[in-house]
Image 1 (cartoon, one colour):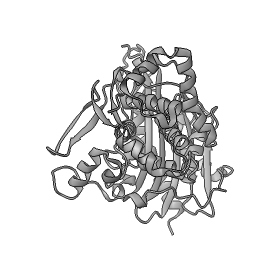
Image 2 (cartoon, one colour):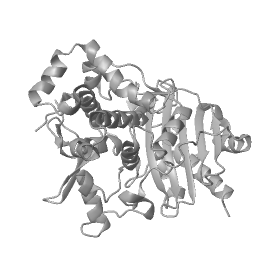
Image 3 (cartoon, one colour):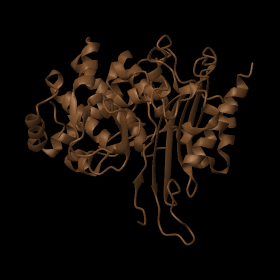
Length: 418
């Protein structure tokens, strides 16, 4: 068994709470909560069934541009850009946005506005963590996909103090008793590496994210010698100097982005996601721009984030198959397949008459969304990418992104009405 020994309101990070991965993927991955979702969908147990947009099978969730690796982000279309900016309203200067419409693949349209505006990515940075893990797997087993799957499925991980502190609930499903519970990850909780990745990407658990980073560091350092024994894992993090751990963290998280063609000046995850994790492994700052995030999505669809296997699995991890929130919660997207990640960071300070609420920061109110939309899910008549960063103060940024999603979808619908 492998042990992962894994206000004024000053600063609150609220990750996306939205489950991912196709619900019929439990057999191949061993992610237990998918078994629960499948049983609900089949009517075997009680629960909320999923709409058509969330019911694609594994073989339907594939990178769609592997035959178009020559495709680059086009020059911005001034008319399309003007229409997108118009949707942003009077606070347009507080947004950075990029929209790539590939519904007519031979006539792509691209819009961007403040696309080089830099913000802390929040939980959007977890796509970087996933990239790092899959790069370490590819380096260890470049020609053995089944072993990569086995490492994800069979490596047993136990949460340790790297998870402190995180209050976000994850799903625990017991197939034997058929009982579902929701609670934060606690020290001593065990699951497969694949389940920890799913917890990081679906309910966006910071505890799971720090645990996955720890595992990616070990895999990067020890290759086919991973997983280590409990004793060796503990010894490695206890005896390795903090500066060396920081250097290993940087190589683990940042090199895979560069190797996948992503400019670190536009996208970087520099640290772990929990207080204890950051104390044990020193990191650096994190940042993202809408342009760099758009490049990431395009290369993901081209099968160029690490390799085809990794791009496919990351896309599946981004597939929304449960509670949709923020940008993805737009009713206009109910019939669409949405591949999504979001994150926010807000800060409040004293202000006469102002009450600090979730997503309403008056000092900082960051909200970021990345989405690939295929609508309707089966027909895929519309196919477009959106990357959006915003810092609109005193406004419910979650509702704001939901509203923008509706407006953008209607705009793209109208362009392809025929």
